[in-house]
Length: 282
Image (cartoon, rainbow, N blue to C red; front, side, top):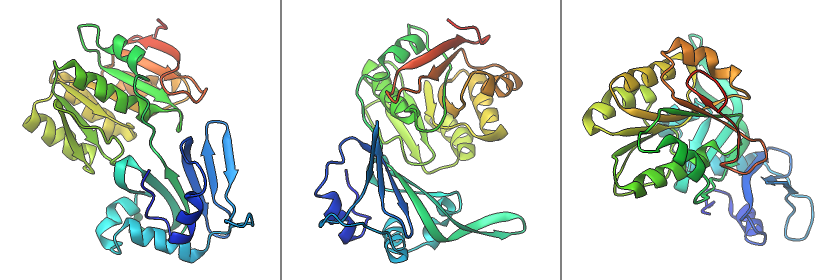
């Protein structure tokens, strides 16, 4: 995994440990770096085994590298609380919000980073794919709290659809995380769902649209409009149970045919429940 946006002194430590099973790197000013994986929590130490503390300069160097020394050019992402790196790596960030007329226009004095390392688990979506596409593609919503593998499953679903060689797939990759391509796959990266749904569906004429993280009323409206044009949509959203999405689904035409609620055991593709369009368990 390419983590070259970290300062050299941190990369030297990473080079001496295995990051294969790590999916989050927590970086906080004045505290050690914490590495997280499935049942893994490592507090980083320096090469001599001593306590390693992140400095303000470390954070500043990371941000400069991620933005290619141009905060202005990346401000649209920055003000939304994240930056991106190669191969689908996403970096969440916290700091001091700067507001103007009641709207956040940027974030300064960044003090915390959450580096989310994408996982590629070939085959983790196979069962879900068999339910979504059994000859007739079903509009489907994948539901779970953050960190349960929704994005990992979406990436594998894209592979499955691509390998089927029957469909044109449009991937709306708003946060540059769904880093999957193929002979049947078109990807629009870093564009808002507003732009992508209103422009790319018309111009690219996909059979299937795959997108991550429905957030807010507008996202649900875009999904409803797309489904009514005959395009099939597969999406994800945050929720701990089916009740968390019932209202939004019903309000916007009940367009989804299947709902997949993920299990919390940390293994992408493991399901807790599957529901039909009327929210009955099947």
